[in-house]
Image 1 (cartoon, rainbow, N blue to C red):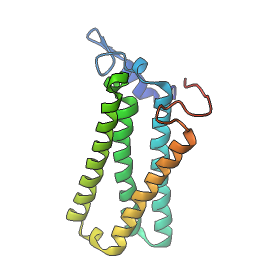
Image 2: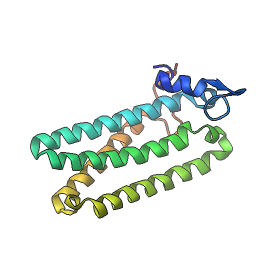
Image 3: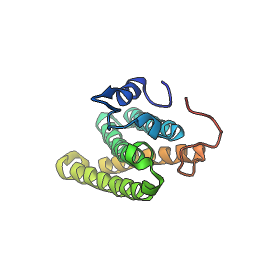
Image 4: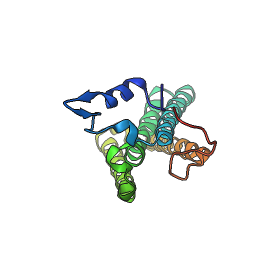
Length: 171
């Protein structure tokens, strides 16, 4: 894995087609800040692992269905944070400093819309999630996965720029 991005994704983005380079019509790899890419993938990995660990603990302590509720809550958080991180750190059109503020607003609004929509659909369509215990486990998984993301961001010390505090170079 080079540059904090899976090699298959890097090659897909860098592939030249019809005289244009990259999947988005320009050289996407150069437009992505390397530190931001690494931070994004760390955040996704940490949140995915947190969701799985929480679900495993709930499965051991309570049972299979409650574990699925906790896993789904964590997955909702993971999906929303992935959207936000992509918008701020990886979207090729948002690398221009003049667009960064708008990207941050789109990322936050998108995260909120995704979270509320998925939570609403879950409670509206999945009857077992309407019980107090299942809803509590879903929200617990959701919150703990968010906390895992906050911890990764705090440890990185990036201040939102993806550079990290350890001075490490990407690639």
